[in-house]
Amino acid sequence: MQILLVGAGLSCAVIGRRLAEAGHQCRIIDARDHVGGNCYTRRDPETGVLMHVYGPHIFHTDDEEVWTYVNSFTEFMPFQNRVKSTTQGGVYSLPVNLLTINQFFGKTLGPDEARAFLAEQADTSITDPQSFEEQALRFVGRDLYEAFFKGYTEKQWGCSPTELPASILKRLPVRFNYDDNYFFHRFQGMPRDGYTPMIEAILDHPGITVELNTPYSPDMAETADHVIWSGPLDGFFDYELGRLGYRTLDFEQFSHQGDYQGCAVMNYGDRDVPFTRITEHKHFAPWESHEGSVCYREFSRACGPEDIPYYPIRLVAEQSLLGEYIARAEALRGVTFVGRLGTYRYLDMDVTIREAMDTASLFLECLAENRPVPAFRKSPL
Image (cartoon, rainbow, N blue to C red; front, top):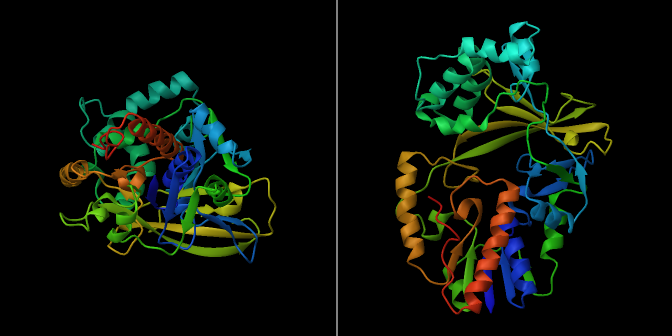
């Protein structure tokens, strides 16, 4: 079977590899001049620092099969993300933990004392939090909310936290110990040589051809038996019903001789600081040594037609429009939508790979049973 896969990021790389191993011919195209999508990494020519060109990507997962899979294509080095936040004239540890609480309030509380203290700070009049702000006030109180969440969230999402669902904050835990590892997952690391060589290795199969600088055009589908689409869901339909909402990111790159901030990620919680964070890329590869440094100031804003979409908004208006596009997609035959853009969801890399592996398995099952391959492995709604 001739399969056209649109996008040379993780989704299509993993699916293409699996289908090629099963004997199918896979043509992968990408409008950009490189593979890897937003995971793309390259060396800065002046400093030699390994740069995460579209912002930092830190691999973390509890899925042992996915961890084994990526390690079969490259060597992963141990890495734990330890984020700091500059706010209200101080520097603190994130996620909010026992050190953060003691530093911020000038106390020396133990775990049980800190729990009791935050319970006193909490707004217990809020019994059923509906918004991000209500959720924060209910569980961490106004002081921590305004220092670490309010300004950052307004900058990241471009709206008041009162307009965002409470579910967003449920992913930001408070820890009553001194653990400042940003992620809980069992497996955490970074590819020694960056993500680009890993994805190139996945794509290195005689059944796969890769064409870069090659935008998709509908006539390409006429020469394929099936299309795997990892581009924007609404883009496949030429935005006929309107555009789904995204936030995009602008990066202001600058160099520094020495060590600029002493950590990989520094958030800026104050609303009057226009950027959300500064990332210092050499700290994402602590096994390397570089005299120079490359940093990004990161700005979030509404995504325009010519911008790279990063974060799906998925608020009420987008959910309704998404439902209409899903209905259109499911009425098609011969097209499967995958990945962050194709399913309009924010996906971590491990989830992207897991879904790609499962999509490839479903694809092969459908062929073996002579039944249509569905547009989605499961509904994005």
